[in-house]
Amino acid sequence: MLFDTVKIGSTELANRLIMAPLTRCRADAGHVPNALMAEYYSQRASAGLIICECTMVMPNTSAFISEPGIYSEQQVEAWKQVTDAVHTAGGKIFLQIWHAGRAAHPLMNDGAENVGPSAIAIDGEVHTPSGKAANVKPRELRDDELSDIVAAFKKAAENAIAAGFDGVEVHGANGYLLDQFLRDGSNKRDGSYGGSVENRARLLFEVLDAVTGAIGAERVGLRLSPLNSYNSMIDSDPLGLVSYLAERLNSYELAYLHLMRADFFGQQKADVVTPVRELYKGNLIVNMGYSAEEADKVVSAGQADMVAFGTGFLANPDLPARIKAGADWNAPNPKTFYSPGAVGYTDYPTIDPA
Ligand code: PHB
Image (cartoon, rainbow, N blue to C red; front, side):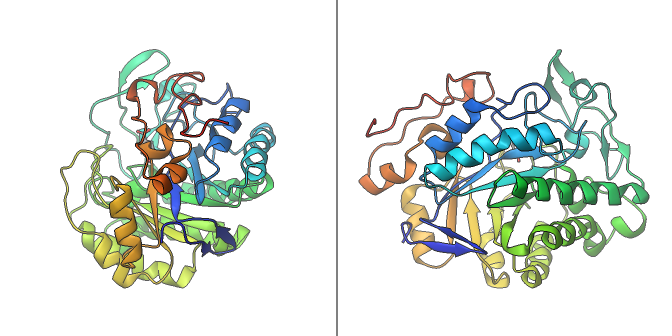
């Protein structure tokens, strides 16, 4: 079942094993992708779909050192070597597009202030080029500033297609800007973008309207993580929120909905997959902690259409071949997740070295 083809929107996938987006911090100065990134992604082209790491839709919104962007001409040109390499190797590739919102840090953005739905900081510290620093309280965005952010997502999607991507994944998860608006722990706004679930979801749907209008819904996916407490996120009714979103998303006919089923820290627990599967009529990718056995079980049972693996693909460029062969998986090394260079990036071995 995992090796059956599947059509997502306009893209035919060779299998149902999806590479989840992974922050790897290997871009060049100016948030420009490079040849090393092309090598890393093309090594993983046997995934049914690669979802590229989160990528900035506008300047001064960086939350990670050396993360890529898709807002400048130079970035678009540089991404072409990545998409070409993956396509040449027979793969399909979407780009995850994001705005970090309050998770961006002035020390990573030439002193630019960070912004969010409400003036509430993330707890704790982040890594910046000048060492660890406390997260900064964001400035509350005015309603009249949001159309510029929507326009930036739209332009980023157009740029992604120009750069050769098969589509984009809108990052609505993990405590970044769109998720900050969705969940009531980070969104305390008055007015039309705060309060009710409909209002909190307004920015997400404005982004989806703009992006699908620009490149076609068949080339757009969306990632959600209603339970993840990463980045100090919480909602008073995660099941109500994700059910509302799943139902409304039906009318978009997206390429897929990508649902993270759990919490990085294991604090917020619920079954979100079952209600979303019941309510959402489109292609569903599930993610977080699936073994090959469980993935096969859920796809065979029709509980999901595809399963995304993060660290599985990080450490195993040939993950589909390993799953097919029943081979062991390389263990990921967290020490090199975000470190510069090829070590821990392009040097994980395959079972059948070329
Ligand atoms: C991370 O690198 O820790 C990270 C980045 C983006 C996410 C989730 C986690 O969506």
